[in-house]
Image (cartoon, rainbow, N blue to C red; front, side, top):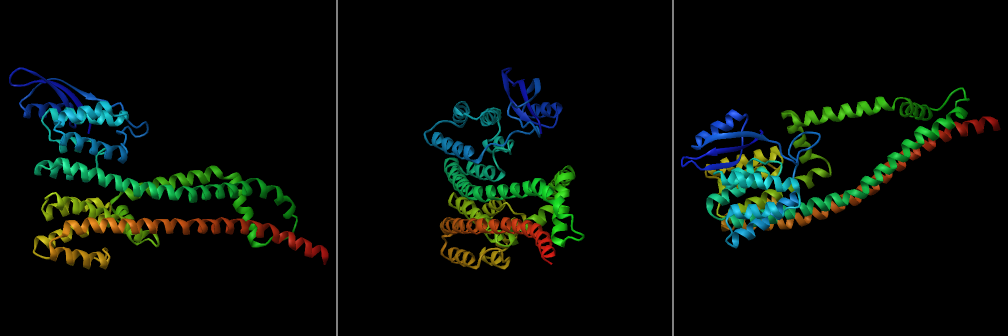
Length: 402
């Protein structure tokens, strides 16, 4: 929804300015009237930080958001009011997109919105999970603690993400270089040799397959590029549909090799958020419903929602999670013991710490196995090209000797 800047007068006749989010200018004026404000000017604001391609507000990096949480928590702990703290951070920010977002958050809070409601208007900067945590801390009176824990959570997740991305750089470069070499050979080397080899009355099947692939790359490359673009667009549209999201969620959990790693990362994220909420005094049912979205997978989220319903009916938490067969038995057993000993929030954070370390080692092992696998694939492609070219040459040699 668009953002509108307004100038209005309050009941005392004073001028009030700020921003709000509404579908139309008329809806914005109605919101002002509901706040007992008389609209004077209502204009749509075009934020400076917009994507050239989509027109949407540019997404702010998680690392910057984590720093904002940490600095805001420090300012609040020092006794600085929320409005003053947000204003200071907006002026100090080196990111134009983040500075614009913080200014709008400041104006919304100044106009009467809660801090969480103001953050919720910027989903490309503040995820819904963070907003839920901050709303709970704002209502419970422990906003500083929630911001500190959110900053720690963002830092851990960003560290794990950067480690995985950094580990994938070399395999991706290896794959791109190998594909470029194969395309060069198929497009420029094979056509030069082809005129010599086609003098034979019959060519082996691998050679005919190689020449057909070379013709496709040399003469129909625009068609291939078009097909790839259409396939990518169709795949993106399908993934964004309800059925596609469900299929993608199942693949994420059950894919060979990657599935267990993804599942454990999602479970660690849920355990850390759930434990953080419980440690800050959030009731277990509310904490479950807030933390379930942290998994990033609708199947896991639905499983946790069912567990919350079972807990509200008087069951233990470990029972429904164990029956889902998505949570490892070792984690389920630890949760059961923690429930009995009333140390659930502490055990959840311990589970997240230990399992994240194990998951990081699994990611390292997966990447190490991926590198020789890519080498084998590239070597297989080169071997196929070599055999396809050598077979007719050997046939010509044997014919000449005969």
